Length: 631
Image (cartoon, rainbow, N blue to C red; front, side):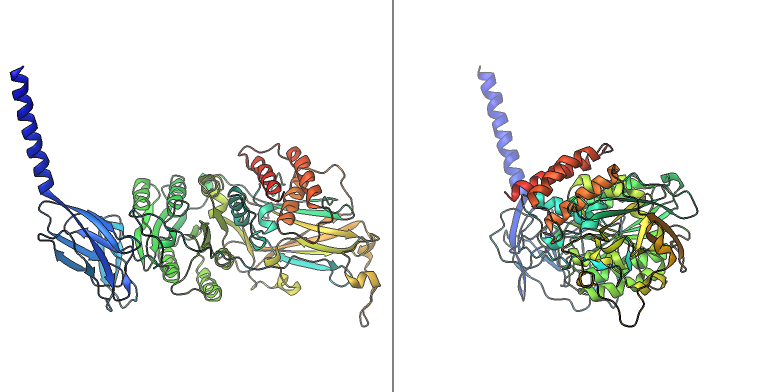
């Protein structure tokens, strides 16, 4: 027994000595980093000569544990001079950084950091080895932050472009309808985000055509020299029994991944403070990691980031080096304001330097759209992207998050950058756009795709295009090859719906000139012999090859034959369009919302036999959610 006590005493002594020695060998240093303007959130503190570092919280405070033998701390902040301070015996070190008027651009690669003197007004710093550091977060007032590197909530500043719903046009006065196609799907997933959070979406956030085009349809694939096939259908309109509905569906050619051209991709990633949220930068990194897994050896990827500054995280790298690319993504952290304009210029520069002739060259911009430093207005961004697209590099925009989401800016960028636009609200959506629809997202089959429809006045009194409010073109734009329009990617489907008021139908939505039988003073009202045929309308298409400047034209004729046994495509598009009209409180829905909800929930389930991914089932659930929110 004495022997056990003796051993226990020795162990207790050694343990006390060990604990005391450890406590003596390391210290915790705390303090606050400020500038002449006040606290600096997101400033970095690094132990000199090591990869250990930390960041300041929203009030500029930090805490770092320093091991024995490390006696110097380095304090950094983008736009300010670095400071090195010897710790000595202190446990509290407050630092005031001075602004640096002579900045450098720091290019951060996966292997090392290279400083190149530049006469540039931006810089980017490095911490924790080769990772991009968190730079200056925007200064906000709020409660004291008790946990380092936590996200912060800003006032809701989401913005959406205002739009006015398309109205009915008289065929006698306006026989032609012209618009640009749109394969964007951002509005649907954004609407889903609101409904899943128990809120009805803002009306301007709802773009009916994007909701319809979110789903895949069983349309005819191309059987001739054109890159897309055409499907048309004429039937009854579900939200107004007096009207008819015309469906025009395009299906782009499907190509196996191994047969796709090589790709040169630049990820342009927003790592500013506004991206410091679980549904922003972390979700972005997971989504792009899935895309990287799809790359082939001859594909190339570069990574550019921007916050208070822009920098290269990964130079153009072969798709075979997946681990290296994914490691570069993993190291990204959020912090700083948003110099989006400089980031876009740098991304296009790298894309052009690594341009693949006869391949796919694309910048993928991932952001919440909060461009608040540098080029910030929609007009400036539009002109910048219009200039850059001339190089043959296309643009994909992926939006993330909530609260300060800038839908209008991202839509403008994608539209003018010959690209597409999506909103990523969860990991399932990230996989859908970047893996399941990988080919269509990255590889363009036709650009500047336009549609022009001429209606036969013998059968159609008036018409209106459902959705596409921001894609309308003038009549003369159809034949103008300098006029920009939409793009369609590999395997993409596009749907357009026209609501028709047949001749002889008494409708409250008929334009006034039809009601009064108005005639033009200087023009004849006579129609051609073709009007006496059974043709309801003629649909004309124009498109260019991805690297072409001259458009190709072809047309399809829709006969005046109403189909009573409509296809699943037709029923489903009716349901989705109807839901969009409920959400926007459309003045053109004749039936009550109660009856419209009932129609959707009774008919949509019969049109979802092809729903392997479950998106149609999810739509029905969202309709039920919206109905319950309005009760």
